[in-house]
Amino acid sequence: MKHPSWNDFIYRVGGVTVLFLIVIFSFNKYAPSYVGIAIFVTSILVIFIAGLVVVKSKKQRKKKGASRHVLKNS
Image (cartoon, one colour):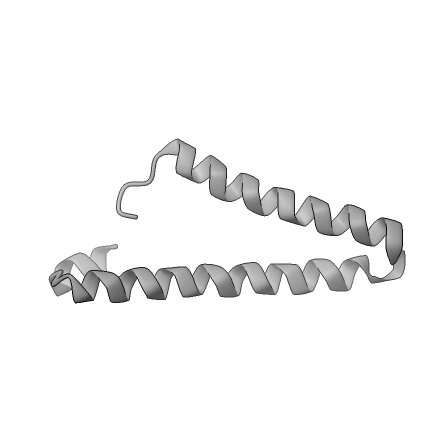
């Protein structure tokens, strides 16, 4: 996404925040001693998924014939 809007930002950050809240509250209820581990694993998964999205978007741009200049600046 070259020029994301505020709505895109709010959806992404809000989605991740809701995911973390669900993990925290569910682990507080069912397994309180594992909340820290659950947050750590969830954050690693979120970072991994974000990395996959970036790699996928760069591959799609390359397939469409985007120049190297566009790929480096994005």
